Length: 255
Image (cartoon, rainbow, N blue to C red; front, side, top):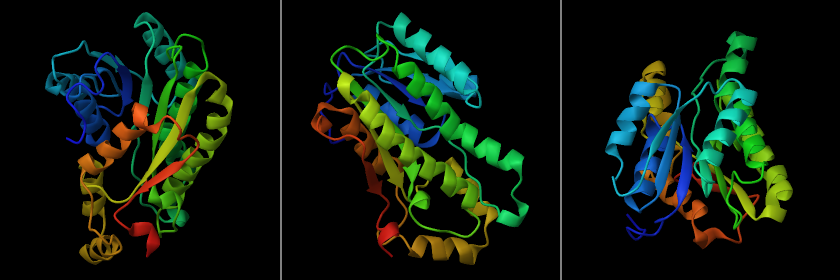
């Protein structure tokens, strides 16, 4: 861990997608440095399992929500944050994978992939627009994006579109939230060895996965590689950074 164990003491963060993968790792990393976590996920059992892994030095809580409904997400995030006395930031790590040729991609596939990250991001952003949700001194909203939103890839049209939407959202939200000193940034990740990555690897031929990995100059990443970037963007070390997409992809996007 590159941050001091008390670097986030007294801070409270909402982490979505906290039941697995990068969201889970980010919740653990923040809590290890003193933060209180509101762990938001779809699966209550798995989200509570994450809570059980967090450093017990601060109060943590679980929030179960349907990410497909932006209005429902806005309401539950606003109400929970206000009841907690405000939060210092959000890490939006929720999302789904989809590798499907455009010929096979139907409206249901598009709705599902956008609901997981884009619709829920709109809901969270709407919640943050209300006074008292983010504390008066300001805060940080960090959204997971992907290098797939920056580079073309066969079978990734719907997924890439959803991540490009996240990056576009970040730029406009940064302008809208700047007067309240709420920073908004995204992380464009390359291939990271998570449960989602494992599902994708099983769905592709070995040759396709080998080719995908070869495009990462530094190989596939680990969740901790993204956690370090996320914690930096959530911390006071990034107070002059907003509206940006930080590329953390092991060199994938430069090939």
